[in-house]
Each structure stands twice: as C-alpha cells, then as structure tokens.
Length: 136
Image (cartoon, rainbow, N blue to C red; front, side):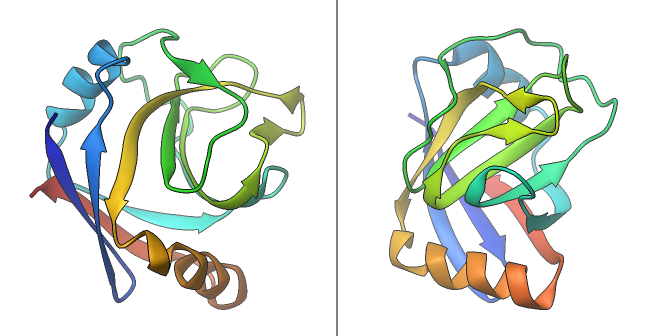
C-alpha cells in the first residue's frame, strides 16, 4: 500500500491506499501533489469534503460505502450529486440534498487520526482550510 501525507490546516496525517479500490487509487495518485480546499459537510454528519463539481477522475464505483469510519476517505465519482472527496472525522453517513450516496473508500488515515476531530471542528467553525495530498 502506498502512503500519502495529508497536510490540512496545521495538522499532518498519513493515509494508506486501499487495495480494494485499485482504479480510484491509480487515478488519484496521478494527481499528486493535489492541492485543494476542504470544507465541512452539509448533510453527512461529522465529515469534511472537497467539492469537485463536474471534475471526472475517470473511475466508476468500486469498494463504495455510505458509512465511512473515522479516518476513511471516499471519492464520489458523480451522478446524483457533484463529484467530491469526503473525509469522516466522526459519525458520518454520506449524503447530499438528493439523499444517501456511496463513495469509493480509497484512503484510510493510519497516523494522526487523533487530530481528525480537531480538524473537523476547526473547519466547521473557521471555514475552508487548505489541504494537500502528496506521497509520504
């Protein structure tokens, strides 16, 4: 499994790629280093997301779930809602204004998990935060 360093706000996390989502992982690795803004979710509970609009990663559904665990990172390839990346920091059910969604679980935070709630709360109360994904 490939390790990815994630820097968001003042926090550094390490995630590992998920072997059960090989197409999503391969496509995402081609984007690295990947810089964006992360904001708090609107419907999904305790999570942060990167709204990607009409962006296409070129993958379909694989290893998808609506119920990410703390530290799970999902990629939603689009369809009922816009394309997005979501990071669960607490209780989360992936959804949009159209209802429940499922995203590809392609990364899992393995180091720095203890900082996820602080990142989520900071994003909730202070707004969009810079986030960078790069090879560790």
